[in-house]
Image (cartoon, rainbow, N blue to C red):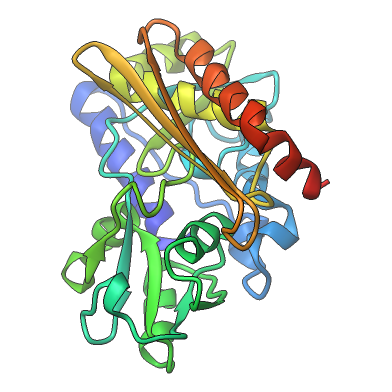
Length: 296
């Protein structure tokens, strides 16, 4: 029910109605656990699934025909009756810094306090600025920005896609390079989840799918699943298809960004799952297994 979720649902509604003139799409707002519990970090209240469980239940019960998600919120294991059938063309998946004085990350004062609840963002940023402190701010993009501007905090890290979709692109102080902070699996992408046995909706989803975005997302989600990490482990990944090659970079870190493993691989786009697993194995065999064990 957040403003961003409504923006995404409305975007898909318009895309469907543009292609199917005889169809009228109704939006049904479903409040999820993640929308309701705003005083705890995601890693404490159940991770990514808190934004999708109630929506998936409505899909299984045929209350709705199509679920629209931020792909980064969708767990790698989805109910067997459902299918993440389409990925809309992905927008820039990188992170942004918004700071009070429009200061870049490297120029923020020593011991600055930054708003982000994401362990992935914290760990990667600590590896380049170990003096930073972090606090969690939950809520919609606009709620978080309002809280930030009313606070004494020096900066806030958010996904570029959400900031721009909500019309706050002019507030961005810096787009963080992938070398500083790799995004979450699926960041910047909207996904459509449907019932596997619904042929009519499946055809609609196929017509909205963006092939190279789907290939990249499959590789990223397979990588994440093989590492076995959700919100509780700092994992970043970014895949893209370039010149008919699938390139994927991944990072795994301890909580403080002291032990950080970055690797990349490439391969044929027709095998995204294989490429994702290959990268995960490379990281696990380079000390990643030890880091994952520390979280168990």
